[in-house]
Image (cartoon, rainbow, N blue to C red; front, side, top):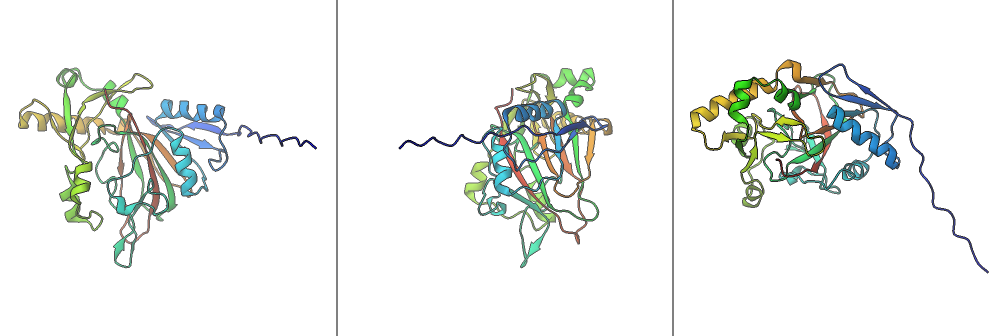
Length: 296
């Protein structure tokens, strides 16, 4: 007796909409369920929209950490944050971003994003992008600001362009760590092994997006410490000009979180900043981070 194997299930495309924000960047994705299998055509559409809009807001995503990890991995390998004590036990690729303190100990990184930055710019292979999924939101505050670094480059005055083209700058995770540690309970002392994970690196000040070819500024007030081969005073003055220019209001989108939002941004195109949450209000989100390319 022969048996016929059951046909493998096929997954259908989903009916969803991508709506651009009235802002210098960003779009929302409505009607897509990331907890369901994503066919190649749908994934390609999301990938294209991410490149076009730089930040995508997936509304009403009732997904598990495992599903967030699985979707994130479709874009590349994941990177684990150096503060591994704030990772989910069952999913070490997931960083808990939270101001909640339980039994006298913080459950996550409560001051993440206190300064403008691009995630993991201090690594040889910085992040391609990050995904942040809302778990518990405060009744007020908690917004996230994004700044378009392609526009920052496009609008950079000619005299500044001339000063930075072809130059490199040093990035280090420890640049403002002591400052943050002094003001909050969320920055533990780092072990020797953790410090070894975040040695300073040099990155181009103007980077080329590896998928679109567009140029973007790639310095931040959080992690960029100096411009290579410039005297300290000239380096500091030039960096301060670049920082101020990068985050002008006309380059920004302000995200006001809704329940179950999942926000996916391009660290090669953007910087971001946490606007802050009142201390007495709870906030918890789960972050995954995708490894990118060596900047050029």
